[in-house]
Image 1 (cartoon, each protein chain N blue to C red):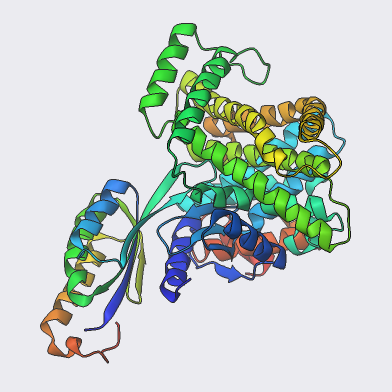
Image 2: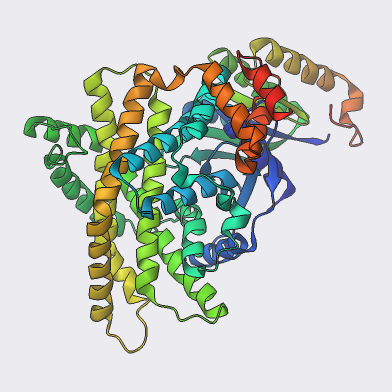
Length: 113
Length: 427
């Protein structure tokens, strides 16, 4: 199954940590931060390269955070959404759940959406 | 740096810099590639400086990737360079205050674009350009023009200091005893600085002795507080790292140009640039706070916190520089003589520049208070667009480029005046 690059910008550390906790522990997952000019930490980042089946739990965690307005943007594969809405997160989740159910998604040649 | 890292940086820059269309990466000038090499050598980790073309003046450090990454927009370097030279130019007190107000407006406009308040951003953007004092306007402040300057030492410092400071946030301290000692020293310095609040005309907030103690205790226990000693320590460490990088880089650049390297003028250049970055920071932080509807006392105190933090930082940097100078004194002079000469030069420079800095601080304070009242976005759009039309008709290249970039950032978002403005700039 092909790996997918997942990035998310979140408003606080706790939110970022909750997304990381939903991903399989792997060296390819990291938590980062953006330090502004005055040294204060603004946004938090989740950066990961994950298998398709790890995207679904991450998206489920993100969906709740999106509803709480704690997600500034997400990028999963080639799909990038700024200020995502709950509906957009639901559509993405459905898309990846369908891919899990579709045996063709297991093919390494399967292109990203 | 991996391909995935590059994708993450681009994604993040789009989110942070805002706007409706992605910012394009820019090719970093060779001087910055050299700075990255030098910083990487001193840090012991790979350093990547990534530029994005954007009307937003910004610079930030990004952790979590395989290398130490600092993202910048050339506009940040251009703006701080323009203000640096304007600060050093002969000008009246009112011109300096006007300059500071323009500086603040630039930062406020960027903040409003990020938030999607396009109408307000357009008003502030136009006002910042059209009411700017003539001192600082001109195409000589484009990054490519700045890099044509023959004053290599000055050029190295003005372009590199802010970036080197951000790289300094990646410095780690394996020996915890050193930070603990310095954090104690910062704590003591902070108590002195808080006690002196209200003694200066530019710092009107006086804090009672009992409130000083409460404030210092609260700051100690609150990691996000601007006066938290650990937070100030991180900034001091980044400042010192930037001084070290600048001394090393200025030395190499001077040698390559066949010039004699003298650390005293380099130290003076760095000192001035450090103050300019403090002003940029003050304008940026305060523009971020506009619209939070603080009471007057809260507002004044919040702004005073930043002043106090900068005061502590500059005192600490001054104290710690002696150690750094030891590595840079030229042959023929003793370490102590070199240290004394640099400290004396910086003290003299401070004496000369302090009144100018104070007027600049006052300008930022008044702009900030006006913005809190809503004055900053209460500009007449018809007047602003009329003045912009005249300016474009005169062929002002820098304004035209910035206006186009502003339209590009805003994209198709509609706001009163925006469609007229797009038509004026041909976007």
